[in-house]
Length: 117
Image (cartoon, rainbow, N blue to C red; front, side, top):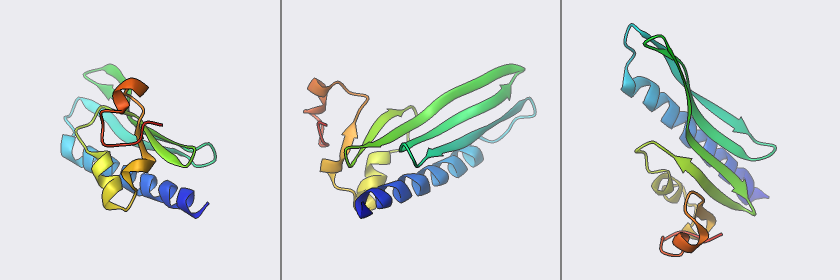
């Protein structure tokens, strides 16, 4: 259980850092009213970054990043940023055998450096 608690902490800290970075890096034009939000469900172990609001009078909403903790592994389900979450998890001591690239099919995962499932 200590490992899962650490993975929860790691994901929350990384996503808070990413959210802050993305909010600052993109800048805000006068016609934009949206932000990057972090969503943590630590009971069911779902972690997301979303963008929400309005830009050019059009509704903006979408998932930028989604990870889950399943079977004591971190599953990266979606990453539409250019940020390397796998590298950040490795730097925090998460072994490659505990990171699954869920956005790849199981057949393709075997060609990655990370866990298959």
